Length: 157
Image 1 (tube, rainbow, N blue to C red):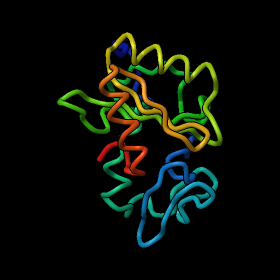
Image 2: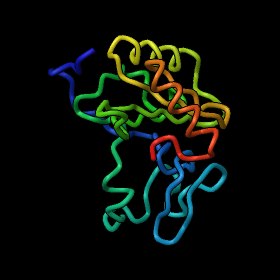
Image 3: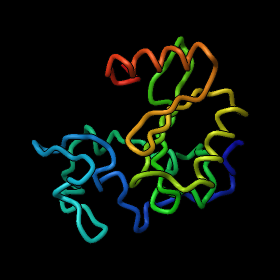
């Protein structure tokens, strides 16, 4: 599903999902995680936008915003309840996509779309939902991820 070359660049709009605490990050000595959004984010704006740190803020790649995003319009994170992180790490030289739920779980339509994309594109997917990780991809990938998760490792390390 290639991106539409005639599409205009997407913008965050009112979406602040990346700052709302769904991704575990650290910004200027502040831990951001579920229940603890970025202290510099409020009313749909970043108070330190012009001086935001390179890592993680400036380096962050929202899969919905990426110029080559395969995601449809309706998959904007605040609408789909999913943050898509394309090619977040590699497994045996294969890029692995990661999706993190906004709230307890993503919308069923969004989850189904991502699982279908993973199958069609033959790209492994790690999906976090209800606080648990689920792997989609070839059997060896599934086994590796289950082993990593059983050891309480981050799946991408």
